Amino acid sequence: MGAEKDIIIAVELASTAIRAIAGKREPDGSMQVLAFAQEESPNTIRKGIIDNIDKTTQALTRVVAKLNEKLGVKVNSVYVGLGGQSLRSVHNRVLLQFDGLELLSHKTIDKMCDTNSGVVYPNAEIKEVVPQEFTIGSRSVVDPVGMQAEMIEANFINIIARNTLEENIRKCINAAGLEVQEILISPLCQANTLLTPNEKRSGCALVDMGADTTTVSVYVNNILRHLCVIPIGGSNVTSDITSLKVEAEEAEELKKKYGTAFRPDNEDKTGQKISLSFDRTEDEEKLQEIVEARYEEIVANVWHHISPYKDKMLSGIVLTGGAARIPDLPQAFARQTGGELNLRIAKGLPENVTISFGVQVGEPDRLYTLYALLLEGKENCVGEESKAPAQDTFDFEPKEEEPEVKAEQETQESQETQEKQEKKGPSAFSRLWKTIGDMLSDEE
Picture 1: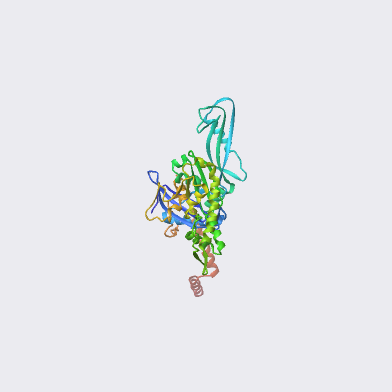
Picture 2: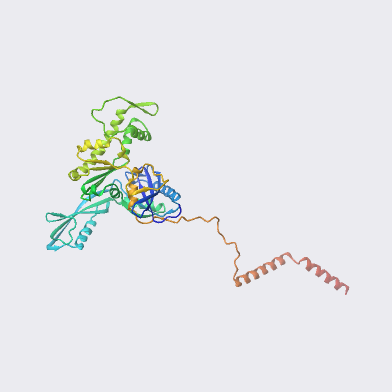
């Protein structure tokens, strides 16, 4: 491909695999996907939290190496998503009382924001602050600057997570020889990508049903009102199926082939058998009961978090994630909600994402988190590929020595030669000359 400029790299640390994607921003603001790579990572990330730093680092290193090869450039930094079981929203109110009527300024609002940011949570830290409405008297306003008040109440949604969540992500990224461009809140990025402005404004819940977790984000009047991560997902369904004495891989295949999130009460019982390993069979109905029971639990937990806002959610629920691909999931939600809310399952590529010719991404609607992180990226993440020299370069040319050093070496060599001659005794020529001298002396 050659060197490109302004290539953005996004990484998703998912429970089942580590994925990375490269994209280039087009002039119209859309994103063109240039490459995709993933590495299976069993037993490295649990409930969205890094469980094994070494294995995660190794898998990440292999993923980035694949991108380097496909892009023809060297990845230097990445945007990475933050999610996981400990991520949640907490409501906080800040009250400010004045001696009399006070003209509210930006300085006043900044002071209230600073007070909110200073809140300390046990074993957790604030990752993002989402301001809500301000209350003046009996009125709720979005922008109170310029108004007069004797007292003002500010409402905030603080998105918090365990202290070590971001720390471990940075450890793995740096250990893989990369820099962190930015750690982004994955559910917020997803909502920006999958929810339309009208859905956010009129009230909507985004439900991301993953392998180990289910994330719920509720929007009303274009503002995030609630965020939580429920620690159950599709892998729990698979684990339940293993009670039929099958391995996890077989259980996953059975879930995909026969599973359903909803079975009508009046369904005819056919007694159909399904084949299991080792020439065994089992009632299809029993398998479906296991799958339906777990999905009923997941949907009930989701509804527990959504129901306080149901009267304000005119756009209903938008579903995404691998576990949302189970058949009859809309019917399961309808049974739980009483059919009060509309339901949409996100499918296909986001409108502002295109895939370059020849790039393989598998099923594109499984990568919404990656697309969302990619679209949030702004800074270039790659550099020129450093080419290794064709051969080792050594200087074989003799260097001209300094005159003083050269003279010293010649003197030393002369002395060494003389010493060697002394050890060997007179040379043959010297002995011959001495013999001739002796003969002349005798004649005389």
